Image 1 (cartoon, rainbow, N blue to C red):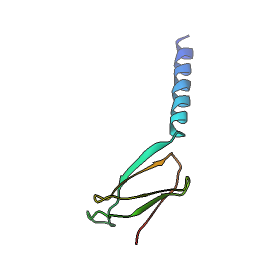
Image 2: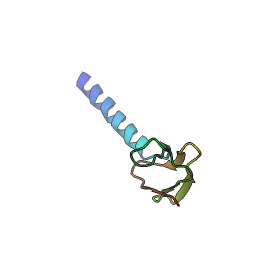
Image 3: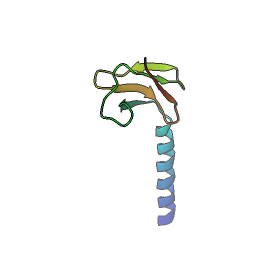
Amino acid sequence: MHFRHLFICLFLILLFSHHASSQQQLIRGKIFAGGTDHVLVGMIVHNSSQDLYKTSDSGGNFVIPGKAGDKLIFSGI
């Protein structure tokens, strides 16, 4: 009987974690110039999976809606 309860709990945890990973979240990051500690300001962050755009702030930070598996593209002038 104890094994059956453990199996049900694990099944519910896995079910919940799969549901949570498919939900929309905010993706946060900071953009640096390759191999340096210099932040990049005004970089365009494109979530091409959802066709959303955001721009990095004066600290190189960005926040964009997304979910697991979305593709982000970074570009700048």
